[in-house]
Length: 519
Image 1 (tube, helix red, strand yellow):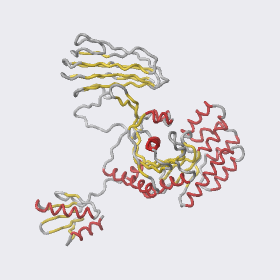
Image 2: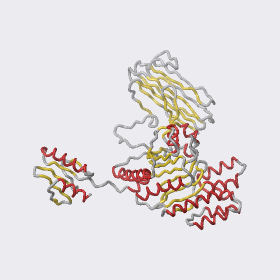
Image 3: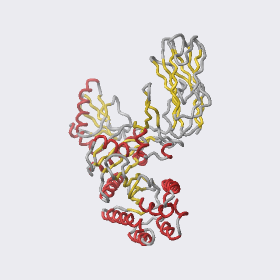
Image 4: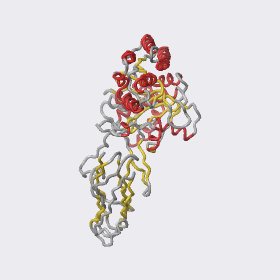
């Protein structure tokens, strides 16, 4: 990996004191090989405590010694508040693995700051500010669709007894590394930085996934098990190709979920949510036990090969094993890569597994029970054993919710990597994607209540209060726009205008009844 840091320049006005610190850090396996780096003072800056400059305006280098240690020491330059000048850090280049470099500026008063766009988020005064890459705004029409998806999920989860939680946006980096949930692919997309207090720092992340934080929160609070927990919150993953980096999920974590009951309950919540939004979901089912049974036939005793194939399984699914299998097991795998939705399909798979792949039989029997249960509740399921998933994270059945040629959520049985809980079942529904599918533009504006004179304003406010108490929407306007239902409040009483016609109303009660019918 090669890391290049652009030069940084800080202008210090008279009377401003500040400390600027650099620190290089890397993963334990990395080697730091700095080519060059130095601090220099430019102009009448005054003495620098780190470089021991004695003459104002002097230029001194504060080099980082070349090192193969895991991290190089922090270097600081304290600038005294004398005169006016600038402090510049030269371009720095490192060659190594998983390196990181950071610059910290600690002013005691405001400092004009300029440099590259990467180091200082500045733009010409005439430029229109835009959102950060990978982030998006939800405007009124989109927000209404998002609320619809969010409300459908919350209602379904509450009906099944799930209690809502919310975890911090910022979590410790070590929470995910200790849990072993940061795959190499995810590591490349994590927003991570140092939470720096001026003397020491801790590496933190913007929450890349919600399952581990929810498990941590339950464990930290000592919640009794089993625990049914739900959440609506975003996960953050850096976008390399313009994809969204902030993805909202509606999720369930059924900690301590009993076998089979946990899966069918979580599946029911997901199906109810999608059905409430007008989708006809199909549940695609797989089981990691089948993949592990096949993996054992080609990688038994070879840990390096096992790890390589496990990584490929997560990316490619069961197809990754096909070239490695014997002819006997290849027949089973070829059928498993097909998708089937009837009891006969699973019966054929079990018959093939019984001859030389007995380890896969319990997983197939578990899937058979799930298919029967879902079918009895009127929901369609498909066996899709070739589905890619994290075969190290999950330990049982895994599933997807598909409808309209898209996948709207995933989940499965897993073992929480920390805490007391030994088994759990969960799902995550993609609320951002659902909202985008549901968005139909901005809704029609609510009726406008228009006071005809200033003296009519108190009466107009009372009319609004009564309308709102009836559960209806209305706004206060100085005048009514075209094609908007308008309630005029004047000295002669109430007058309702809709679709260019006047609707006579004799009382406020009648007005509310008419508005309710037009809702």
